Every structure is written in C-alpha cells, then in structure tokens.
Amino acid sequence: MLRNACRNLKADGYFIATIPDYDEIITRLLALSTSQDAWNSAVQQEEGVYRFRVGGEHHFLEFETKLSFTAFMSSLRLQPFGHKYTYFQAGSVERVPEYLIQPRALAELAAEEGLRIVESHNFMHMLETADQSLLQRMGGTTTLSKECRQIVGLFRTLVMTTRKRKK
Amino acid sequence: MPLTVEENYTAQHTRCSALEGANRFNNYVKALLIKQHMPYNGQVLDMPCGKGGDIKKFRARSTAFYMGIDLVPSSIDEARKRHISTKCMFGAVFDVGDFTLPLELKSKYDLVSCQFAMHYAWDRPERARQVPFLAYMSTPYGCRHMVYTLDDVKKLEALNIQIIRELEQSHANIEADCMSYLDAKKKAATMEVYFDMSQKLEACTDQYARFFHEMEALKKRAAGLI
Image 1: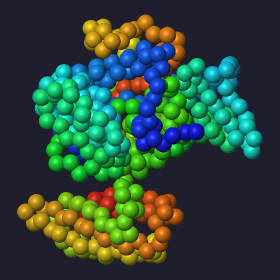
Image 2: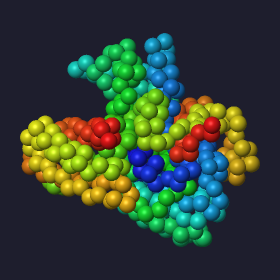
Image 3: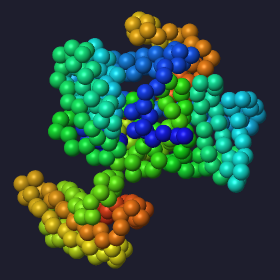
C-alpha cells in the first residue's frame, strides 16, 4: 500500500490518509483498568479468552486475546503489526476486522518507501481548529454529541510526501 | 458475526441518526485534507475509492484526472455512476483492484488519497508495505524483477549464481533461475529471478513470506556489494 502510494506519486506529491489514532485507542484501553461500564469492559470468557471493549451505545472497538490485560497492553507496545480488533459503528461499519497502526512502525515503513510524514492530527484537533465555512458547506457542525465526539476522537489525519526536506 | 471488508462495503446499512454528526465531521476532514493538499488541475489516485464519495470534493479542486480503485466491484459501479451523475468535467477511470497489491499504473499523481482504509492492511508489514507474495501465490510459477544500477557485468553474473544457490539451498521446493539484461547506456541491469513452486500453495504462506523477505535482503546486499 505504501509502495503503491510512493511509486505513483509525482516528485512533490502528497499522500493523504485518515487512520485510527493508536495513542487514543491505547489511552481508552488503559482506562479500563480504573473504570468500566456497559460499553467499556474487560471480560474473561471461557477457555481463557479475554475481550477488551471500548466504545459507546452505537459504536465499539473490541479486542479478543488469550493474554491478560497487562500482558496484552505490553504486546501492543512490543509488536508493531497484527493487533486485530473488530470495529462497529452503527450505520456504516458492521463488525469488521481492523488492525492497530503503530505510529513508529508507520514512520519507519514510510521512510523505507521514501515517504515522510509532514502532518498528523487527531480529529479532535481538527474540530477545535475547524474551517467553519467549509464545515457548514459540508453540513457539519462543531457541536457534537458525546458519542459523536468519542468517534471523531478515534481518528487522526496523516499527510505524507515524497518531497525532500528543505535544507 | 464479523463481516469481511468486502462484505461490509457490499452490504446496505441503515443510517444511524445518532451518529450523523460524526459522519458529517469525518467527511469534512476528508474535504479539508483534499482542499489543503490537492493542487488545482491536478491528478489524483483514490485508493480505495469506495462508492465515489469523494468525487465532488475533487471536483471542487478543478481536478484534471481521477483514478479510482476499489476491491468491491459493486462500489466501482456506483462510483462510475456518481461520476456521471455529478457532471464532473474531469476524466476518470475506475477499476477493481486491491491497494495492498502492486498496481500497474501508467501515470504519476499529484495526490494519493487513502481514506479510512489503511488499518485493513496493517496485519503484517508485507501488506502495509506491499511485498506482493500473495500475488505470486496465485500462480505456481512466478517471476520477480530486481533492478540494479551497476555497470560491472562480472559482479552481476557472480551475484546471479550466488542467488540461485542460496534460494535452492534454503527452499527445497523452489527451483530458481536468473536472467540478466544489461543496459550499457544507462549503466543499469535488470535481473529476472524465476521460480517454480511445486508444493501446495495455501499451506506455505509463511515460507513464501520468508522467501520474499530473503529476496529483499539479497537485493540490499547486492546494493552493498556494488
């Protein structure tokens, strides 16, 4: 994917993407150790399978693992790939397997393919600094419900370029 | 039951009014990124393009050419219809394809856009980066091109023999052969490594993953030798 992006870009082109925010997801998972509710839970099931779920009434991310909570959180840091979770968002995503994108692995892989990250912001930052005129034209608003803010905060922007850094 | 990516984007979903605000805001973020980074009259590669939900955003940038690629054939049909119905002035090509496999495109683009999709390919580095071993697995006979910038024919020939020996020693079921083409004018050489996989393919994913990793390592070593 990164190779497709890099090889098909002009010398000064940009690669733009929107991805789940690794740090935000880790923060929400870590919060399970101090508080849980109907939508956010760490449950051990039969045959030693754990389910760690974060979300709200209309959306959730769920990890299924044989590792205990502490071991699982360590593995997220140590292993850059393959951390599968299922994502549900009512009306658009029906429990689809996705994978955490570790920022360091992303930066390293991108650099190997000749791409440099020039900008990356959580969507909450985009909400705070919104281009009001464009947002209104798109039918959007900065006044979002709690769950909408939770969903928006799950994502981040990513801008990469093949352009060389100015000396 | 979990759905595959393809099933999810083929399915019809009932809109959830409670999340409308989030959906609209997420759509706005895409529009903003396009506004900030897509030059006027530029060319864009949208991978995956889905049902063409971003076509209007590119129209607003007076886009000159749009290439849309998506895994789901019905999405490609929808995107094609949307391009016509929105009366876009720019030319567009839509094609079914997997953005984690090598795309053979003839143009270079000002912008490559990958919206809410990269996380599907982050199961292993080969897919995130794109070592195309899955493509080769679909055929029992494959060919890999490796391009070197070198002008020393003897070193290349020695390297050919070395690669064949190493491949055959480490992979008993792979028969490999190499051919090299030298371009004296450009001082470059293209090496084609052919391999024949005789075992059942489905059971050997890890082995072929290692095989292609080793090919990459050999290429790096060759670059160091020359």
